[in-house]
Length: 149
Image (cartoon, rainbow, N blue to C red; front, side, top):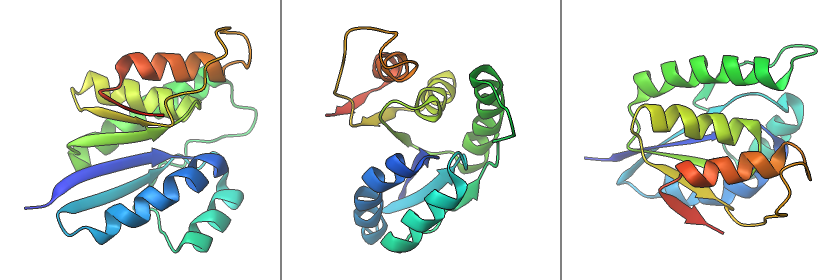
C-alpha cells in the first residue's frame, strides 16, 4: 500500500526548489505523490513544471486580481481544507516562507496531518524584514513536524 504525500506550492521559487524532491518521490512505488498548486505564479510555475517534467494533480486557482494577503489566506484555507479532505494525505510538504506555505501548514495542522517544512532555515530575527516572509517561515516552523533546512 502506497503512502499518500501531498506537496503544496504556488510560486516559481517554491516549484524550483521542490521539483527535485517531487521527481524523487514520484520514482518511489511506495509513495503516492499528489502535487497541489495554488497558482500564485501561474505562467512562471508552468515553465518550471515543464522544465522538470512534472505536472500538477490539483490546481486550487485561488489567485484573484488585487488580492490582499488576508483574502488569499481565507481562500487558501478553505480550498486546502477541501483538498485535504479529498486526498487524505499522510503528510503535507510545504516550502519556505510564502503565505501558501503557512496556510497549507495551518490547514494541515487543523486536520492533524503531519507537516514537513522543506527549507525551514534562514531567519532574520525581525518579523518585519522581510515582510511577510519571516513571519510565514517562523509560523510554519511552529506547526511543522519535520524541518529540513
